[in-house]
Length: 210
Image (cartoon, rainbow, N blue to C red):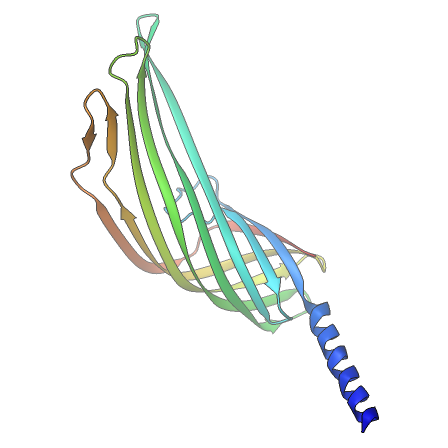
């Protein structure tokens, strides 16, 4: 009886070892076409994948975006004022994928994801004489849910390229912007935008498993 118990424990331990040995982390960089326009939910970002086994993967994508443009305005040869505008964005998109077809170099998968994104827009005017300066700020919130299918092409056992097709629902809420300065004001409108559609975005997913 005791021998059977030891055999059963050995079998369970071996099974746990096999599962643990199949677990791998993956880190990938997602880069959109740099010549294309960026939408509210940018696909640029850093993704992490956790391979539970050969078929099931938990993943999450961190999207960070920023842009700033400064324009100097002159009165003759003298600098009059400077305008600066841009945005900062932060998003987190967790998901799950299932690899249903695997070959020597290719793995085909499908899955679902859900996430949120925050975006802050700004616009400022600074005069050289210190008068009539103003700062404009506007905050937006985005929600995204969708399903996807894609493929990984394994260049080596640890290095891969990938591509995906997504069916997403996006909801964007943009609040009233505020202007601080000599004449403080607030936008008279706020906006809500939603869309559902298939996206095929030219991008490069370069990943490394370890």
